[in-house]
Length: 379
Ligand SMILES: NC(=O)c1ccc[n+]([C@@H]2O[C@H](COP(=O)([O-])OP(=O)(O)OC[C@H]3O[C@@H](n4cnc5c(N)ncnc54)[C@H](OP(=O)(O)O)[C@@H]3O)[C@@H](O)[C@H]2O)c1
Image (cartoon, rainbow, N blue to C red; front, side, top):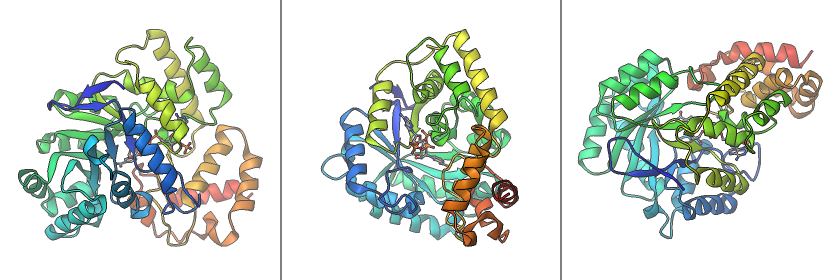
């Protein structure tokens, strides 16, 4: 495992971190049903092989991930890692709420201290909540009390707000969405450079676009990857682009099988900073342009939009809608829509309550897109 410096601290983070958001499930339709024995094997394998950063958050796996990770880290594993989790900013309604959620997280994770604590998914609205509920003062208090070692934030909005937030508080680190397709999206590369110059450590999420850059890769992209002249999987091709950047302290992947853990650890055992050639960058541009031209909706299947009050499987429908265009597989997507989703849970049952839109980190106009998806998939 290769380690990188965590911003201005003298801490060394493994360049691959474990995201606790996409564990294998017992029931693939119920995110609460983490397959605990398999997921524990995955976490232990990762830590035994050098991963020392585990990223969690209050809502992951419908609020079961923190408790599961608390159990999985028993037996000495907690002490071997830097544990990160995030304040559910959208649930905080008063100054007192911050303390309430934080205490609950300590209990769930069975720990006295959170090493890296983030304000979760900051955007314009949640940044206002942070100020209204005096959360920066709360961070100060927890840092002074030794309950948090380092304060940071994760981000899902436009670049100007990102810069404003970076400058508003003495953060140690931030977490941004970055991959070779979304290079100028949200904070993007400019945000990466900005935060780095300001002395923040930068951790990256969604390096594989939630898995979309790693599996079922269209033939056009497979052919581009082959031209790089290296033997590499699509996952490696995507991770290489992020790890090429010296400003990145750690890349999180929400691995969902032991095989993926092993593959990603193997890849993270090599040095990747500044190893890409000019010719390779041109290949990334071509692959990016292909994906952009074929992506209808910028959904990464993070599942933040769920559960829908109408029980509409939003992210599955958006995936079918995207796949129809990406793989020119309209008939397959229509068939799956009809066979796997009962009429009472299809996209036309959306009541436009837009609860999902408030929670979507990618700001997708979900209600409108569901209408389009239904028109296309039910036709
Ligand atoms: N703060 C926030 O707002 C926020 C938002 C999103 C994520 N995060 C954090 O960032 C972490 C990373 O984001 P992410 O989970 O979206 O990461 P990601 O690496 O882009 O996507 C993870 C998915 O990629 C696939 N994958 C991983 N390794 C693979 C391999 N070697 N070969 C083939 N497929 C592979 C798996 O998909 P399949 O299951 O389809 O195989 C896995 O579920 C999350 O787990 C979470 O901790 C935070």
